Image (cartoon, rainbow, N blue to C red; front, side, top):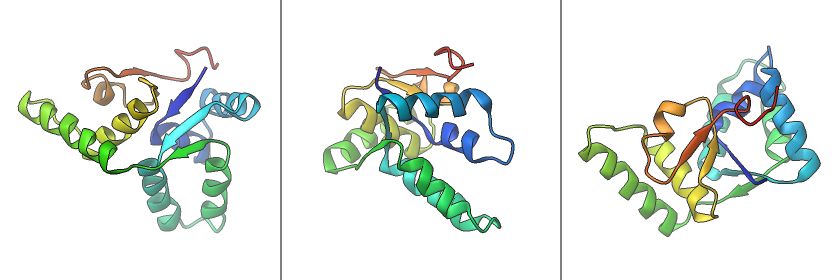
Length: 139
């Protein structure tokens, strides 16, 4: 099963007190080689790693990112992300542009299910199904 992983799940694993279900998900991804994320997530994680006071935060972030395939955004993905964002604004359901770009990245590779802790954000996007590691059985 291909898993498109949002930033929040990476953060679960990088925290001092790792969220067990997210760690199990990453162990599964490592075993099955079926994890994907957006280069937008890489940027978000980079901010946290560079602002962290922990000396190994950049190394740990890079290590975790090496377990999955990173999909770079191109102009088509960026344009689609902008469309998603504008539709949400029109409907009064605005979320962060980064989340729209992450969703557009997943859709660009045919993955409509995003593993996240931000269920309420991603569920606003037509064509996206948001789920948690626990919902997928990673407990």
